[in-house]
Length: 196
Image: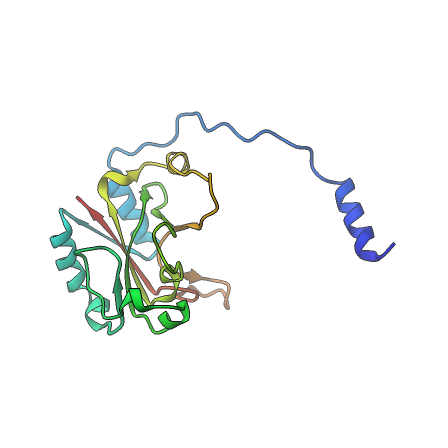
């Protein structure tokens, strides 16, 4: 018997016993002001939240951001909010987005508890857009803000293979010399626009 087979045999003999999934019923955290909670946590983790009444106000607020003003390569996948200097429909390979400065994307919903937004590849050609640009703006209807992750997971269905991810704040790591680095593996800034 090879050493590989021996190791796998040992691992199989010591597998933990199967256990039922935890119950999700319970008194999960609720916030008097979910928008304030979301905004506060997002700020704490390096992002920013813009609360606006409609798409026109969202576009105006976006145009005030220095990162957006300085961006030469922009893509907006949210009609009426931001503009595109890159023709998204002409992109045939996600590597073509390597020089993307700013992306404006929709999210399905957001979670007040931890300021995470849920994004997916539903109706999206390249999911790299969430991670490849220097700056990211995510648009979420205010009505799609839930209190906690349990409420968030209840909204998800995994009935077919698809991509989905939680994104909370800009990319960051503190593994390098125990120093916090923003934008290490993805966007250097994240702006969440709560719409409505």
